[in-house]
Length: 70
Image (cartoon, rainbow, N blue to C red; front, side):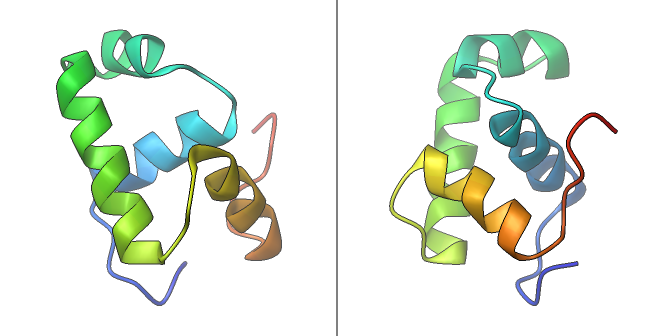
């Protein structure tokens, strides 16, 4: 688990971003709007100090936080 306190929803979004899903697919899967997903991703990027969505996937690997194909 990361040192940064992430909500359960943020953790779900991170996992889906790491899988390569676009915002609309994440929104559909979680029952959110695309705009809400965009806002959550922006907050995640800020909290983790990351520059982009692709950096989220790299971060999950570097942290041994997310296992692909779970």
